[in-house]
Length: 432
Image (cartoon, rainbow, N blue to C red):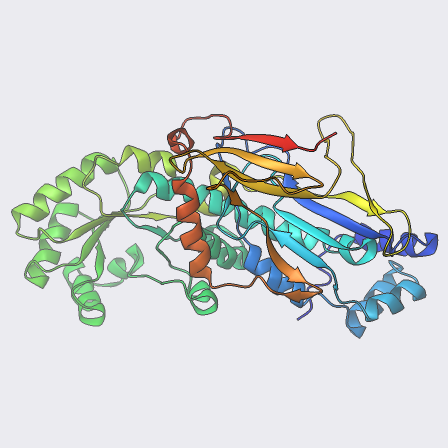
């Protein structure tokens, strides 16, 4: 299925006008970046790269699509003919998926003709803005969770397609598994699931419900124990499994206090290996508050799939350089100067400056030239598309592992839950 209409109309009207003006084929460089982090955040996480590359490969205008645009008067015959043959033939560099970013980090650098690059604006922004917001929230949650696994379970709190993308982004940000089966099928993410309150209410007694679940799913399953009386439910679950119950789930009440009470009860019954999983509108602050409680895992839904208060990353896609003539003409920097919405002209390069202990000190953005490292610094831009061919595809697991390494480089202040400034400053080299 083509992704060509996942776009704003003005991208095609710009192409139409540029073709008429003779400027559509000017070599151009677009950049995707954020002028600032969401308020109070100390770092962001790049996510959606793999989805964007997949969408780019399906970005073409078939006859049905072109006919629709002609009927609506969006394009004229000349532009329609150009669209029929459209395939992106340019080059793309970007931060690899899972990398952390800061204000003005050049997350994506797209070079091609103006016409073939400008039409990608909405497609790229919609994927990056959404997925990076979810991954950034997920990273904060998994950072405070430590070695306790987090489960993504927000499918019922967002659009059905966004739910799949959210599960993927959460996995990049460190979540261990998802309840979303489509995410498991499409991306290979581990899936989990047991039973809801409705399953208990369906049966004549709680014992009947637990017995049915254990018979179907085995003793390692997780029993939801707060439908009626928690203590009675836990005693029943332990009795039915001979103390070998896998886990219990708490979904309401004062979770820190309740977790302590449940742990004491389980231990007194000999179920010392039974895990405690908590749910109920968790976010990074409630997870942090549970750090001292005997909890073994967290299930997170609404807060995660809405970016924990920041459902978008604020990325923009701006023209930063273009030629004044043919394909061999030199590129000239261009920049927007609007108040509070400035951009910096010129092709960008990026480097993560690390101190002698491998801790990030600065995001160094070079304008028109590559910044030189001092031995342990890291260049951040990698080739994603070369001559229209995707070259940056990688397994999702690689992005997840990269994020954990990248986050470990950050100074300790970066992982504080309090509001703060970006964890490292952005330094410019070659900016006029």
